Amino acid sequence: MKLISIVIPAFNEEANIASMYAKLVKELEELPYRYEIMFINDGSSDGTLQEILKLAAVHDTVKYISLTRNFGKESAMLAGLKRIKGDAAIVMDSDLQHPPTLIGEMVKGYEEGFNQVVARRSRTGDSKIRSLFSSLYYKLINSITDVDLQDGEGDFRLLSRKAINAILALSESNRFSKGLFSWIGLSKKTINYENVLRTDGDSKWSFNSLVNYGIDGIISFNMKPLRVCFYTGFLVLFLSLIYIFFTLYNILREGIGAPGYFTTITAILLLGGIQLISLGVIGEYIGRIYNETKQRPHFLVDISNVDEYDEP
Image (cartoon, rainbow, N blue to C red; front, top):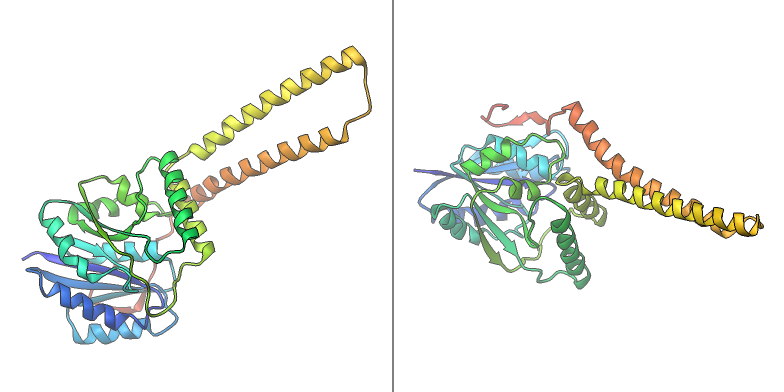
């Protein structure tokens, strides 16, 4: 009998762990599969780990990993995927905004032969401003990157063992899972569902976190910003040469007049702004190269809180 693994990163979700487990088991018991539920405590400062330990002490199907600090959702997901033993895995959030009721439909897609079964949420309940910015972001990222990302698709998905192994083969430090899931290709089925609003606890995604996550998505899968800097530099050089020749022509024809304060300041600000923006873009790439060269592990496990799973 095949094994289905549920991978659940959790950061300060003490209020949702027990409810999440109960709803998961209700759905998983209906399937003709064995299952394991892998919780990853991502350095929580509340009672999240204690809630997980309570479940693990009573239920053999509950496994867990506790990281030494908050490494972020990307690293927590990777930690879970490295340790599960299932023939397929379902990645879910621990805040119950990913409905466990979709598990049966996901497994059905897996049985049909799809390597990825992706749950795509609607924007119901989101503010109009957030929906607008999300739509614009996905249009932008799909126009400049080498992967295809769909608005509403996230980490809530089923991965076959083939897809899991493909993800684990990608060792980069700066991970953007949405892009990685798209980059590996493989057959995919999409399931649509209505957005579920959080009932307990607070969202861990601040505005700054969302902005940084968006930047990661743009930079992780293309070098076009560098190309833009290259072409912009040539354009500014070309326009500057035209301006120089035009100014020289006027000097030769009319003589030297009073220095132009406005023209000088405009040129300085324009060139300075372009240079600073270009340096910022280049710096982002250099910073990522620097992080990759250090080859630090994606996460560290708190060995005082481990179950029978060994380090990879």
